[in-house]
Length: 242
Ligand code: 6GU
Image (cartoon, rainbow, N blue to C red; front, side):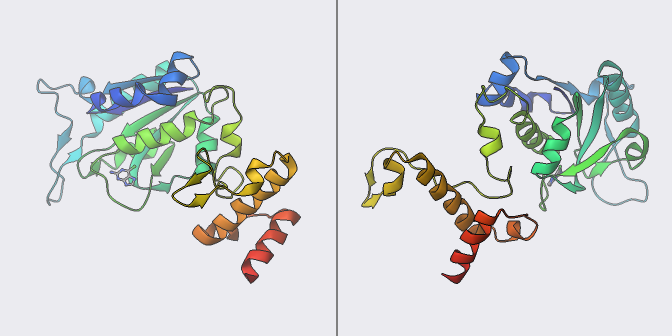
């Protein structure tokens, strides 16, 4: 997977590239990533990337020419890449969209700033408009990092060979089961006995029950669109009656 981020703040990405799973995935060449300054594609002497809105009003709009030039130049060097505009007006990002994006060879992530980008960019040059939630950020940069993080962990081998991505929350439409580590008793709260038992089947059963119960309590909306296995249905019935 290739990520190229188009932004007026490329330095914002340096700390993101240099920590944790993202760093390891870069070092292992599971992903490649770079941040390109849109300013480099501005033709004028002052490399201006924004201008006042036609029709008046407050705020500034990102000019179309530097953005279009940046997207075209990047697309040419990235065969099979999709162009994603990060905008609060986009489709809300979720795990299913992360899976879809992870199937492409590359992603060009375009970070809007100011009040927005000139509308004429969206028609021919953009494949996806994506938002990360219903709140307003000052720019698409943090959203681009969220998206790259979620997509990277789905790239085979990026997590270091474990199957953790498949077992994570949302991958099967349920929240994760509860987790415990040492000590066995922390502030008068004991670890559930079954987890210390060594009975693998019983531990699996307990984890599924924990998963279903937590989803029912914390995110019942997730259960609306989910096909439940017979075992999951049975657990749900039990907890709904409780
Ligand atoms: Cl992608 N951009 C901005 N500016 N605000 C957002 C967002 C994106 N997603 C949620 N809020």
